[in-house]
Length: 82
Image (cartoon, rainbow, N blue to C red; front, side, top):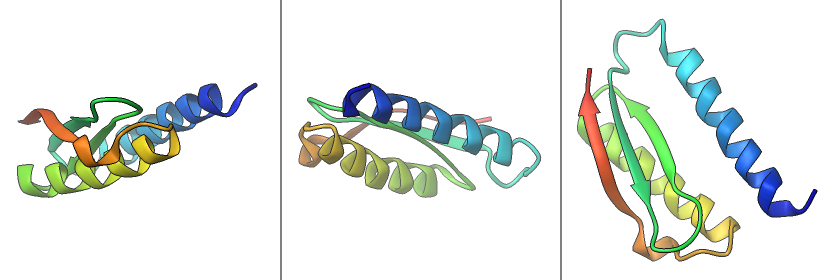
């Protein structure tokens, strides 16, 4: 496998682990998704929209850089609390 598909699987596994870990915690009810213009984005959970947004933007920049994208262009495209 090339690094790019491996990165996608790693991001998917991390996202699923986050979902599984947060499912029993009532404090992590908000999520935000950030995407760069080019490269991999991020979905993150937090106790508030602000916390989820911040975590998502940080992860987006990291994943975008690792995937050869544009980390400085990360923007939150979806946010919600359940």
